[in-house]
Image (cartoon, rainbow, N blue to C red; front, side, top):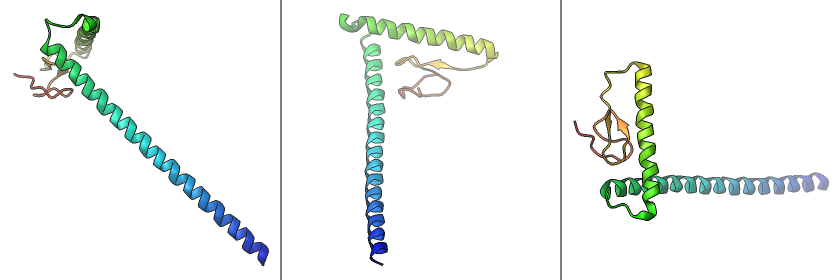
Length: 121
């Protein structure tokens, strides 16, 4: 009988250790998910700051970031060209898409889905 009691106690100890390890893994996963969420929020905010900066200081861009601003503008132009090509392929000539004056995002809504700026009429 003592043998079975000892085996039961060992099994119980192993189960407790496994439960504790599972809890630690879940806590670690929650922390990782929180870090990823905050990183996405940081990236979104940094992007919005950069878009605001470029639109606000269009003619006064500091030399240190002039190349980056130029590459961003080239990317926006390329995206616009690609979207136009896609529209031509789809034959969607009736689309009422507008380009955001702040970030260059193209949308057919009243507000920019990227930065929230009004798109005018």
